Length: 580
Image (tube, rainbow, N blue to C red; front, side):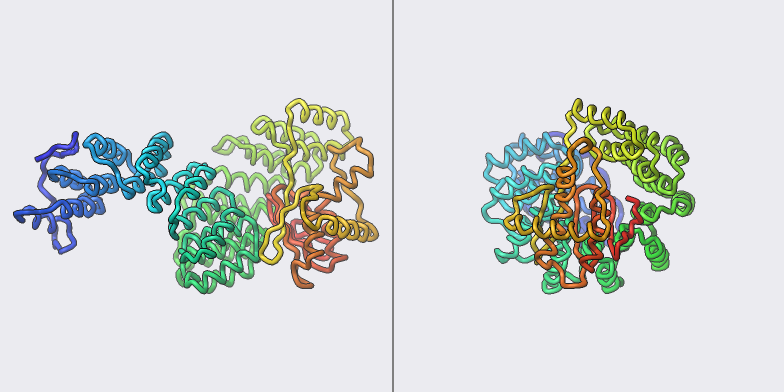
């Protein structure tokens, strides 16, 4: 009997089975032992069957050692039997020493194991071997390889693998769409989804849910609706994965009514992920009452809340500025459910407390909580200090942010505005000098608006759009109208000492204002329907103020999703109550 390195195990009696059946691997194994001639296929099957039973998994190696001449299928069965463990890599090395070369299924299993273990050097060597064996372009192995690169946050490598697969199938496309969405390459994900449908490949639950995730990140409502329609036609509307993604997509697009409708339609089979997505949709709007009611309903359905359920609740309270309630929910999380709050839970609590004006108390919580505060904690405190006009405290919080993230341009901008409002021009000059010395570049603001299913992206002072001349004329017209209503610019104090006309031009040409002008120009929504804008940064004070006036002259809502939260401008007011 052949021995393969040290794969054989000392013989042990098989544990008794109370009722062996035809599918019980021990029954099959017993028949194989009694048989005069048993082929490799039987033993290969036994290796796989034993590996699926936790109590009998060790017997997969013992059975393999009984194969006199293991072939590539035998070795692949052994490697797959130990997927997601270092043993799989060890057995693969034994396979090569045997010597037996892998096939596409061997490589697919190993790429998945490498992703689970984050074994980058091993996977790179494996990719090299797959190129030599001409297997990297195989759809089965290629899909697993590009999924690995996506998990390692290497989307460009994954795209190259995808491009080199000549005969792609729906699995390849699905892996690509999901990977791009997970790596915040949302526009690319939607393009691949469109290409998949154009080429006639059947959609899968993964391609549809991945497309919805991409649409959610862009807050692209029309894309979300189109994918929803496709899901209904393809028969995925009752799929729990797609249903949860639809709830998330509509919620992040700010249309919680649509999200709730999908949620209610799928309530019979909605899992905890879907409930959390629905609560998160309300939380982004600061609707703590609906979030709380949904939390209670979830418990009545017999579902046990997890850390994401509580994160949704705390986010809602943070956006509503209700720190006493946030403290109660944090306590409830620990005492009633035995869940340990993470840093992000404490960040919500600290932020809610600071927004309520309890800055000293919030700072004490940040310093005494069981985690080292990160930049997000200090940034939440900085924003609250700025809102309350506490210049000294804001300067202190900004220093803490910059110690951790010295190139964070938003911290410089926020504290500069607070210091200038207090007339502390020497400190503003020092801050500007610090910007130059550290070579901090202000991150380019980008805003996008969706018109008839197509996403249009704008940057500040952008003239790249083919209708730029019309957009700027329309913006000039709108800004002129709101000035008549009493709008007064709120200057960006990093532009201090710049002549007024140039400062006004810099403010008027912010990306979100350009997006609104384009939306009005194109009639992006029917009269009475809101204009929906997404911003990659925090909306500036001037745009926030301008949009209040714009709602009055345009007689329509403007909904902006910035990096922090949703802003719903209606009749000259914003639902954030000027706290963001």
